[in-house]
Structure formats: C-alpha cells, structure tokens
Length: 213
Image (cartoon, rainbow, N blue to C red):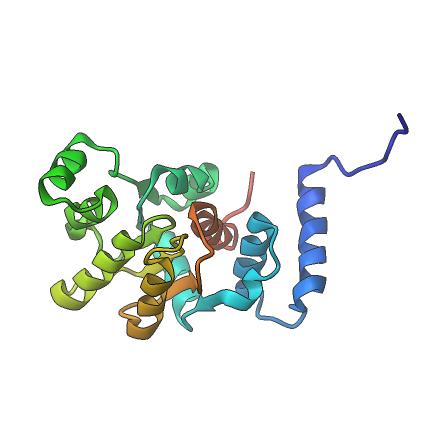
C-alpha cells in the first residue's frame, strides 16, 4: 500500500479546514465574530450550505459573549448538546451548562401531563432562565415552550440558540423564533440542525473569549 502524507496536528487540521470553508462560502470580508460562528457551524456539520441558512439576530453574538463573560448558566434541552460544549473553555468563563431532561422528576411530570420531557424540563427551569443562554438542539417542543414563556411570563434569557432538527415542528419553531425575536437568537432555517450545531455555536462564542487548551 502506498504511503500518503497527511496532516496530523489537530490545530493544523482545523486551521486548514477553516481556510477551505472561507473559500467555499466567500467569507473573507465578514465580521470576525460572525465568521467565527458560521465557520464553526460549517466545520462541525461538514456542510457549507449552512452558511445560507444561518440566521443571527444583530445583537446575538455580543449578548452571548457578554453573558458568558459574566458566568451565565447555559440551559440545554438534551445531554448530547451539553456534552458537546468544550468544558475547559466553559470553565474558564465560570459558566455552567445544565440539562435536567433525564431527571426522575422531569420524567414523572411529563408522564402526568403528556408533554415531552424536553418541554417539561424547560418549564421546570423557568426561574433560572433570566440572563441565561438557552440552547435547544433537538426538541422543537422545547423551543416552542421557551418562546411561550418569554411572551406570557416575561422570562428574558440573554440568548436563545435554537437549532432543533427534524420534520415535525422543527422548521416551524425556528421561524417563530425569528418572527417573534423576544431576545437575541441564533438559529438555522429549515429541517437541518441538531445538538452538534447548537454546541458549535456555544463553542464559537467561548473560543472568541478564552484561550483554547
């Protein structure tokens, strides 16, 4: 078998990837922070088309970074998203990520109401949401209920990252987020998305604040 030369340095691989992404999506002249978020999404997904469907509120990046610098709580809808957040970078900001979707109390309450565990978890965390970053990568129902609480109960997160994926309610929940815009948001239109995408947005914000190990 013929030997091939290939990049083995992790940061070298990432930097080369980002250069390729810049060429693919034509982001040479973009604002550096906007570029950092979109590049991270494209890098995580391996799909340049995300550059066409990302929707970022004008105040979203600033609000998210300021919240992280203050040690904001990050509330996620699923543990996969929580796991995808870079822990060393998160710890440097003093922030914390939590997810209670697997808690016994959530499961019991969801069984009583017939609602999804994700939306039940969001309701149970309502009192922790002001000034927080809410990241929803899987469950449209969680995003719908957060928007309802913003509208009807006056909760005010610093940032909503909403990238639920799928064919039932996902696209609709994200369009509602864009239309109502109760607070700054970052989302991707349509059926694409997922927990890795939401985690990549948080990581992009973190990497813009702290040195990476």
